Image 1 (cartoon, rainbow, N blue to C red):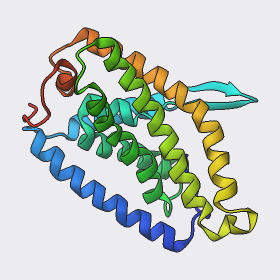
Image 2: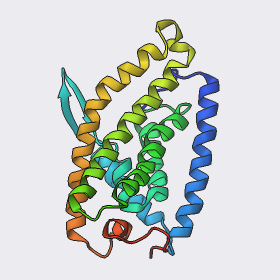
Image 3: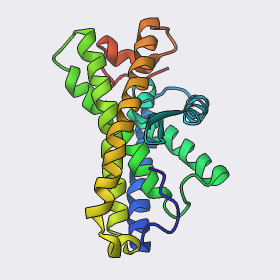
Length: 225
């Protein structure tokens, strides 16, 4: 889902950058209010983990492979606001040092992976709101992880399809099905990895995993040390 430079129109780049900046400012303010101490070390560690995890690819079919995106995982570990910031750091390192995603299309990549992935946190909260069963909790993580990849792929397909580069090739009628076909499958890998990681972390329940408190029935309005 990393869109390289040259795939989006100038107008689409400006629009997605503007939306990404709005979400980043909002997330920064919310994260600062949620954490009583500096979140810089936490963001650095979590970003480094996801950056390394994304290097590991898993096979899908016909020579296609996928890798962990990590938005949903980070949202459960850190909370949705810090997760948006952490994923943005990951995407920035990939774009600057590995040319994995463009600079002009950076706003779109932030929206597709950081914002959509992290906001899946609220879907999990909604799904487990009236249920105390562990099995339902982990099922909710699976569904939210899969859906975050599918929605990110849908957004990516729309952004590319509405840009002039692909308008003569069929536009969204081509780009959206192409993105969804593979990412429906890739999302299953994302969901399996994320659910496995969260299951193990939830089982440990170590004090440092403060953002997992909502999984143990606590709210998200309290400040996290």
